[in-house]
Length: 436
Image (cartoon, rainbow, N blue to C red):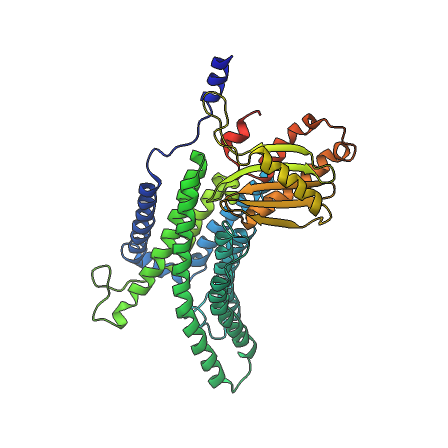
């Protein structure tokens, strides 16, 4: 019997990186950096004449629009089929990027960003840029936080909002004659904030790299590790793009440009941003569940009857060793009993997510009708809360009759593992394969 258990569980082993995550991260960063430099050189030197010939045509912005839109459609389709809802911020950012490129196709812009003159459509497209950056930041930060860090939010929103308001003001007053002085002052103010915003984009890129490194370290399958790698490369590419953009203007401060043999070449920023987005989107297209990938540990899920305090369902997010024994228990039975007593006290607080902080764990509780779902994790996050909320509602809807008329048979709730898979892809794939 033990040999049968060992043979069965031997096939389910915890995923281990063949190469240390630190080395993988360095390789990914170098790929993102060198690849972006190469594409910049390719577009700016060997293909310079071709790019110059299409820059004033609809093709220049149509190609990035077409590529990003195709990836966006595939992403939405895959997330719809798999019922993954953790991509609202990233998908919205890509949609805004595509919409901006479409407006540029309809009305090819002249000048630089936030300096489009009377080109209203291009001016509107410029407004989409800071909004898209904010949405990407939200997607990344909410992987490990319930809400954005106040200092981060003030820095990002406080820098982008004046640009957005200023650009809208320029669009409104552009047709009005005699306001050239006001227009110039608003434009100068926008450009000041734009310089600060460029620094913030660099910080967001570094921040995204840190988050993805955490995801890479906590990856429990080759698919999640590969997805982390792609997003890592995407942020490295975005970071390198803006560094190159700054270096290309170095000739205005120095005797010669810093890169490409002392020559200043055209940085085709819209193409490079699209390239970075493609790498990010590729991760979610390959593995839609990556939307719920976390860079910290989740230990255990419990569903308790709110009035009786009885455990209806339990899922431990750990794999078993070759003997069939669970490696680590999140909470021992006395702690679970204490939670049961607490549930009786809070049973009236229906609908709210309650949070208890322990020394090394967090207990997140979601109440819904007669049940309370309890999630024990290393820390809390927005996407984890969304997963818990969706799980709790679907659990109650599927087993409503059994919960209302509970007769003591907890075995009836065993199929709830399918609801766990659907709403909590951040649970270890090994654990989801096991039959407890």
